[in-house]
Length: 231
Image (cartoon, rainbow, N blue to C red; front, top):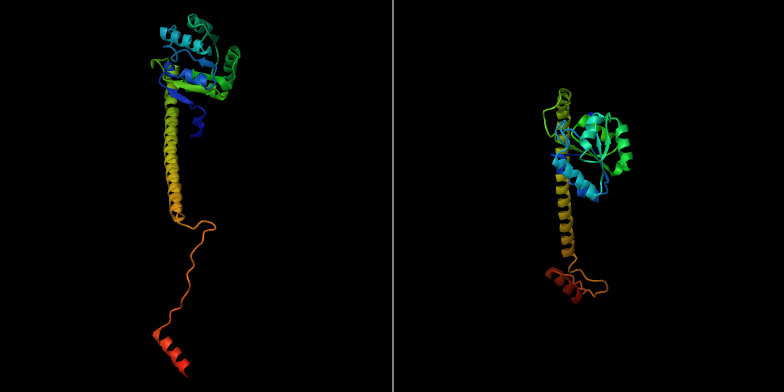
């Protein structure tokens, strides 16, 4: 249903750490917004070595990064101590204000900013509202607070529709590819047939032999003609 499409992510990936950030940088993206809990680390955990390496790598590539979370200042700043990027706490996602403030900190625009998060109704919906390219990642730990567990049940319904749409798009692409191939083959076949027909056709200015028309007379006609001549 169309009502679900406003929540559909641009891309789904298994992990924040599986995204090809180098490729995205080459495509012109310069800023990345990250949710924290269950996107970068398990809920409530401090920055892991994997997270530290990721942000070190992103800085070397040339990205500006910002943590954007609905959590309080203490949680966000505590996580950021070993990361050292921009932060937005109490962001009230999916409200637009937090996303715009984060881009202001990074000095980026919606068209060159990426969002990475694990929740549809807060992270992804908010990013889509202002036109950010977004990645929905699989939650690192499925053991979550009760209010998030309830959201996950609704997310499953939306993601079911999302995957059905993606399957249909792939089917249509296969059909289109097959149709184009068939059309190309038909055109090539017709050109080949046309070439064979015109292969021995006389060129312009070429002398074409002419044949005289000699009427055929039956023996009876000849006899009548000789008889009339003898009279």
